[in-house]
Image (cartoon, rainbow, N blue to C red; front, side, top):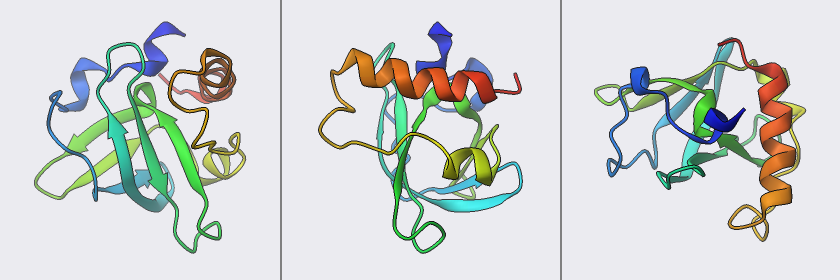
Length: 116
């Protein structure tokens, strides 16, 4: 599960390129837009603002769930369904940076649902 917090080489994402504002596509449709992202080695992620889809909830998606980045269309694609994202652990702004236990909880959830 160590790669859950890193972008796969096949995604097309280059560290340092911003993903903020990109639309996010689950395997079964759009889920929102990237509010924030990190390219930090071993702790890369995107925070998605789901908008009205799940009442303004923000979700933390480990970079390993990203399957493709389309810079021309400004979209990222993840290997999760809308329901898997909706049922994910609640995003915690205070814990998402530097809290190993929180990363373990989130990474464990998404690790169980990965298709790759």
